[in-house]
Image 1 (cartoon, one colour):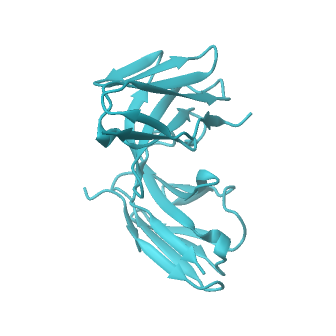
Image 2: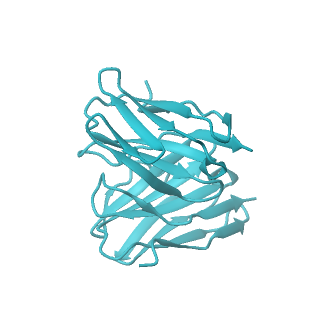
Length: 113
Length: 109
């Protein structure tokens, strides 16, 4: 398996634009997690899915953020409109259980100018 | 008290040295732990899992002190390639993983 695949690897966008981050989890993993990492706050869980269903989105900072998982092999995280404070590395991870080993994608480095 | 606390470092050590860093956790229900390793500008990857009182894997030893609610990671005979950030992750069967901010280790020649 190729592991968790994220795209794009880097994204630079202007404030106010819509940003869509994509993730393909490892096949057979029932859990998918979206994390955001910054120097100040470390790795923060934004939302997670179980069997394509969003379970807990309490980490989503505000309504500008939304996430979907239309099928077992694809998820998106959308920010609309984007703001400079959204600049961070966004990781997608998948796992076979809620508290099991999480396998991370390479991340998307987002810069909002 | 924060859920997971780690000294951010950096810990600067020469090659061959032994280094240890601690992680304190607040949830007494944490049943086991992960140590993840994150290289600069890379994703976190699992280094080791820790159950019961501890675990040992080659040069790496993790020890758990449940009474004081901390877990330590000891690295013997440090290599240049050990330079990374080490993330502590308490596990509970009832919640998702909560990552510490990590401890940065820099091993110099």
